[in-house]
Length: 85
Image 1 (cartoon, rainbow, N blue to C red):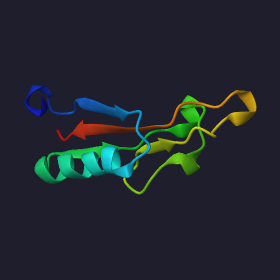
Image 2 (cartoon, one colour):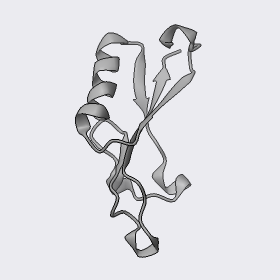
Image 3 (tube, rainbow, N blue to C red):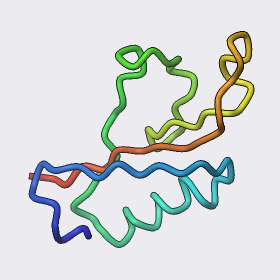
């Protein structure tokens, strides 16, 4: 699939797993094999989330207790991978 992405294009990786092995671990492996991609910064405020949800890679990890005052959310991990120009 990485060959289908034009320079400057993006892949959105998302998983409903809370395990780093199934989230940031997969992103790290992808980046090792694809040096022409990087994790694009996600503007948390733009989408109404707190910056504290970002991990060291720049992905977001949301736990089920987040927004518990309004019912909570499913846990997930998301990262935007951008192909360099």
